[in-house]
Amino acid sequence: MSGHNKWSTIKRKKGAIDAKRSKIFSRIIKEITISVRESGTDPDNNPRLRLALNNAKGANMPKDNIQRALSKADKDNTSLVEITYEGYAPNGIAVFIECLTDNTQRSVSNIRSLFSKRGGSLGTNGSVGFMFDRKGVITIPKGNLNLDDFELEIIDSGADEIDIQDDTIVITTALEDFGLVQKKLDQMGIEAENASLQRIPQETKSLEVSQGLRVLRLVDEFEDDEDIQNVYHNMEVTDEMMDALD
Image 1: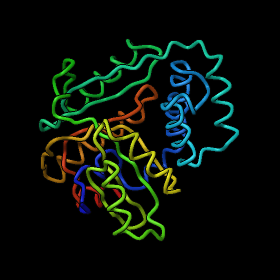
Image 2: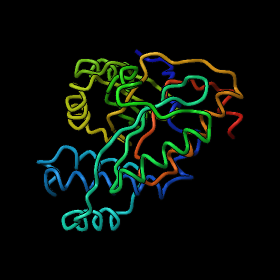
Image 3: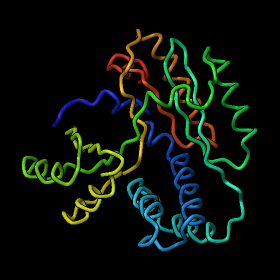
Image 4: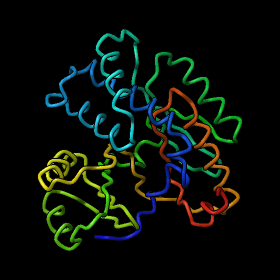
């Protein structure tokens, strides 16, 4: 089940995690806030919060920052709302955007403006969502795992696909098996670097490098928006595109 996942580099260009660390922390804090509001501050009884805290640790977020976020979330009266937007980037690339915002009018205005400025268009709800599947994606360190034994065990627990990369392993699960695979990793004593529910394109679309760069730059602009948590698209990202971004 190993192999190259075409979507594994879709969301971000190389090195962007380090370059945008403060934005990543901001996203995690928002996720902590809405998780606490939904189900309280006990991660044992709040799976969404437990996932957010695990991702905070995986992103090397300082413990003091995490504790402050928890304390503030328990008292926060900000009306954060989860909302999604859908549309098309240039050359017909489908884009799905997830937001956590306290001002939906601001969010939709900014998103519509970016689409228009970059030759795309904001669509209606449901216009592209059907092109993506909701799946669990878990990244773990490769370490000294016996890969054959590991693959057998993790597949038995519900993993759909395993992508073995240089230093990491990316595990993909069906939505309903996400928690089961996380539980299996816990039992194996393996700590995830990141675990999340993502929208994976059912099919990817190929573009020329110059066309693809326009899409990737639009994605970067979306990801710079404070209201936006995640951006997904169905363009196949090639090595040539990644090299051109370096």
